[in-house]
Length: 230
Ligand SMILES: N[C@@H](CCC(=O)N[C@@H](CS)C(=O)NCC(=O)O)C(=O)O
Image (cartoon, rainbow, N blue to C red):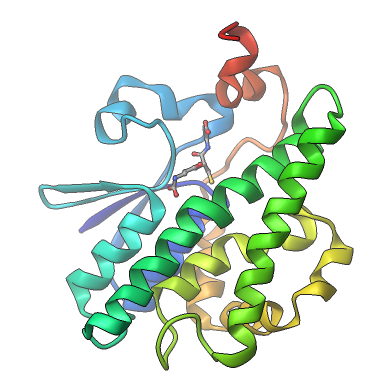
């Protein structure tokens, strides 16, 4: 059975969605990042980057959410567009665009808006601008395409859902109105039974994650605060 190392954060949730959509049997293993469980030697042995999600499938270990989506799609033959050079090119381009743009800029935007000890206007403005620019590109794409790649719902849509469903909290409620086509896709995915099951894993398995963002959480997740490198 696939072992799924997870928390309720955006990157693990897109993988939870895919596991549920594929109907794969999996064992969810909680990794409480606010308690620093991502830095244990056992966890670093499966993901040297010390972050969730990770899956272990037989002798294959896969980390990084978008890599896992592609791995599971290739394993099951599901949620991929037709294997033509044109669609393969689109799939890889949009998947990497989400991995290298949407995720990191959304994450940094949340960090500087909500967690940085000082409010640095330059950083907040830069990351808000870049996050919104990336969502704008997706919104424009979805004005003429029902799904991001090909004719059917697939792994790029799932990757987008992971972060875009959190736009109201990540960027601010007022920003949803700027991205109606993206919201249409997110709402469609959120209504799927697999999305509901993904978001309910914690309750179903009675995995209690730490909710307070206290000194322990800060030390575990913002290690740079205790090290001077610049
Ligand atoms: N590129 C990675 C990023 C993973 C990532 O940032 N995971 C977050 C949760 S969404 C995490 O584990 N944070 C804990 C930490 O940074 O210590 C992916 O897409 O899986």
